[in-house]
Length: 253
Image 1 (cartoon, rainbow, N blue to C red):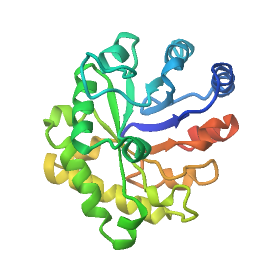
Image 2: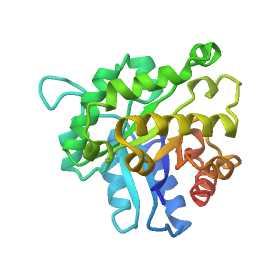
Image 3: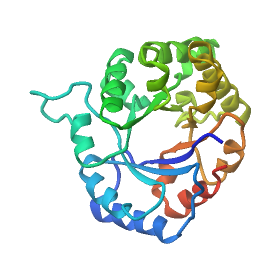
Image 4: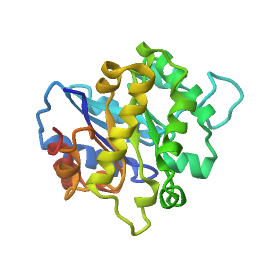
């Protein structure tokens, strides 16, 4: 079975103490994970060392950065490099989140560089892709997402691409009042896998985890995760509520 992942994205929320308390609440639930299951906490940079320390004795629980630079090092005030993340033993990094693309104008080409630097540092990129409302309404979402994948990931070899996790975010279903159905989620996940298969073959495509990032909640996680091509979720608001995220973890296949 493919790796199944419940990934919490805290975004720019919680004080240090609130983060500690939330993490403790989730860990106190003592959820045993199967060998193919992972729980990942994508937290603000100042909290990474704390979270990594808290998770040190936990099996299959990991800290993740919410971003990294597309530069190795240098005069880039405020940036954090993949090498810096590696130096504090961070194993995952979210790249290309829709908010980074929209608010900080991150391009597919810059994300290709970020992914390459993460892989070089032994960090698994959680690569986000997905279409905004106008693209979905025009019915061109498949070509849009395919272009994101091609321009950011298709420069990698089979060995490299196998080290990536993909997260599909239907941006049009986040904070718009519109809701993506389970069928729409499965449809796009299957399409993404078919695009990967066309480039890298069935065996590689079948092994890559694809997470769903469209307003996953405690109430819909189990139904979403039952979909054959949905391998867990990248969870925003619900990951800030301990009881809800615990239910989401329990929903993993």
